[in-house]
Structures are given as C-alpha cells and as structure tokens.
Amino acid sequence: MASLRAGHRSTKLSSPLWSNIKRYKFMYILFIPAIIYFIIFSYVPFYGLTIAFKKYMAFQGIWDSPWVGLDNFRYIFSSEKFLTVLKNTVLIHTYALIFGFPIPILFAILLNEVKNQLFKKTIQTVTYFPHFLSWVVFAGIVVNFVGPTGVINTILVNLGMQPLNFLTDTELFRPMLIVTGIIKEFGWGAIIYLAAISGIDQELYEAARVDGAKRLRQIWHITLPGMRPIIILMFVLNLASILDAGFDQVFNLYNPAVYEVADIIDTYVYRVGIQSTDYSIATAVGIFKGVVGCVLIISANSMVRKWEGRSLW
Image (cartoon, rainbow, N blue to C red; front, side):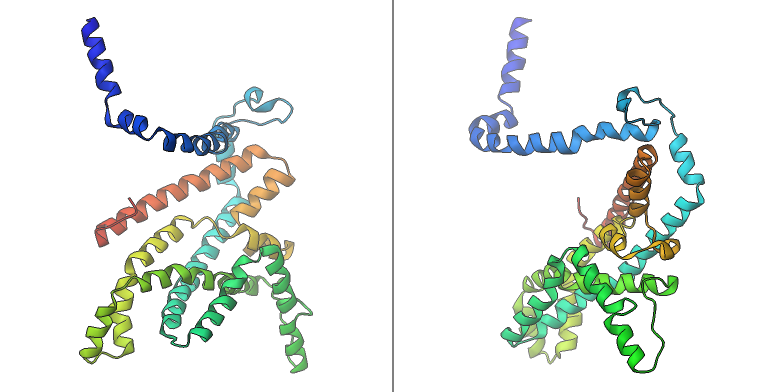
C-alpha cells in the first residue's frame, strides 16, 4: 500500500503541468499578482450577488439580511417600468447594430483605397480622436450642436425654420443617440478592419487586376471575403452585448422628458440601486442582464460554428 501511494505521488509530481511549473517557475511566479488581482476583484465579489435573493439592509450586512428567494426577480418581471426599460435597451442597441455596425467596415474599405498617405493619416487622426474623449466631454460638444441654442438650431432659425428639440423630443432622441454614437466610435472601430485588410495576400489583387477586375470587383471578391472572419467575430460580440445600450452616452444626454424612450437597464439600475438605495432590485436586474448576455453569446457562437465552420471557441 505504501509503495502504491509513493508511486501515485511520483506520477502526480511528474505530470506535464508540474514539470512545466518546475521548469518555468519564475514565469509562473509572474502570474501570481494577476491571479491575486482576479481573485480579489473578479471572484470574491460574486458573493455580493446573493443580495439579489435577499432584502438587503446596509446596517445588517449581506450575511444577516433576510432571504426573500426569487421575490426580487418576480418584482422586476411584473413591473411595467422594467419592461419599458428592457424594450428601450433592446431597441437602442438593435438600431445601433443595424445602422452603426456596417459604418466602420465601409470606412475601412474606403480608407484602404486612399493612395495619398498624408491625406489618409489625417483622416484617420480626425476620425479616431472622438473615441479618446469621455462621454462627459463629448456630450457637452453634442449639446452645443443639437441643444435649443446649439449650432444646428441656430442655422435652422436663421433660415426661417422651426428649431428642433433633439434632447427633449421622444421621436428625435433615439436617432440622435445613434448618430452621435456612430460619429464617436466609427473611426476607432475601423482599426480592426484595416488590420484585417492589411493581412490579405496582395497577390490576390494582382491576379484580379491581370484578369481585368476593377476596384469594385476586387473589393467584393477579395477584400470582403478576407474580412469576413473578423466581421463575424465582431458581430457575435456585438450581439452578445444587446443589453448594453451605452450607459455613459445615455446618462449624459437623457433627461426626464425622454425617460419613456431613453431609459435603459443601466440607467435604471443606477437610479434604483444608487439613488434609491434599493440594492437588491438593482443586483437582480444585473444578474438578469448577465445571464441573457451569456445565453446570447453562446447561441451566436453556435450559429457561427454551424454556418462558417469556425467560432470563438
């Protein structure tokens, strides 16, 4: 028996993992701070999710707060306010996906066709720059353009037309969100597509030119197929975040007049959890959002694997 235990121990210690750890021990030591970081800030906070199943009372703490089971989830799913918030979130993200997703792809293709390097770099710099502005700053710029006394309304009034209430009109607010979101991020989003284009074999273009293919034919039959894997990847990631409609953007631009069409899950959680201190309901909504996102990304990945024969994992 003792010999069997010794043999088992020696087999365990001679496993490939243990051999690698022993051989590259200093490299594994470098992983320790990262592992500690993720344990403290990513795994330990999971305990806080139990708030969603309790009637959380700050002075009693998480452990001593009374359990209520699924009551918080029943409350949010029976609340008309939450259903409106869920609808707004899905609609805003869907509109952004439909109108905003193709823009970086088209921009990358057009930018790739520019031969003047100085002009190309200038355009890249100008379009990338808004990404590095926080929404606090960019929202201020947007208000200066679309506000009641902003640039656009000033021009309309000078032309004898009626000003438009972009920030308070429920019919105009969502389109304004989509357009400003595209303007801020399309340049930065094109980077990954430009990288994909640069990885396409140039001999394919040369062969196409020899065969008499014009630029549009080359784009359709070479550039777009070469970009397809990264387009699919980005689409899957965007689809998985369908319940993320952009908290920073909406929070800095919306107001009570447009809550009906602009209030999204993240802003709802902020108001309920932070302003109203109802942490249990806010946590329940957060869990719902996370579960839906997980289901969506797994489903989208399965569909991509079925259609394309490749996937994220």
